[in-house]
Image (tube, rainbow, N blue to C red):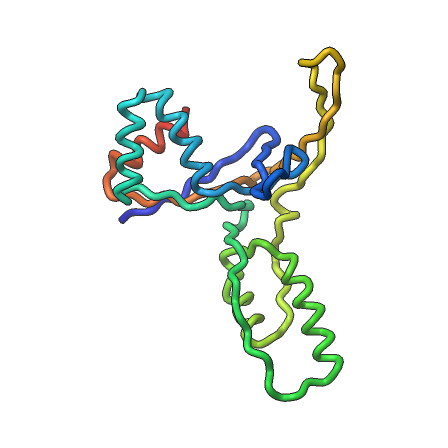
Length: 196
């Protein structure tokens, strides 16, 4: 299979529904999963190519000839991947209290880290193996920010306010996904959809 990376830049704020049940509009994710991406591509495909074009796209995906990754953040300098889960064996030998405190402080920072720059993965894995402190060179604060915006529902007799959390990407930042394909015709359909 061949692979291509597609970077998506946004000129306006985005809202990706949170996966937690009942999260509502007040919570957003900064990324979306592959099924959500495929749904968006399928909607645009039917607009461009009709039901027959959509049937071909669905068939290629079902056969495994066309695959999509989840959508992840990128900055001008890096692609980010989700922090891998890793089981670390406890140290058998005794440690000084200062060493334990330093390691635990690093562990707390790591717990909050959701994405790691690809170029920094080795340093992250080494920190997990050795129990040392990992400090990312870039974080999601360098990519985007979330903001809560008030809106007004004017459909009822009484205007009712509500809140929507949205993601605003910084300049030269956005989201990317990877597409895997067997035939050039499949990826050209995806590229046409992305350009529409």
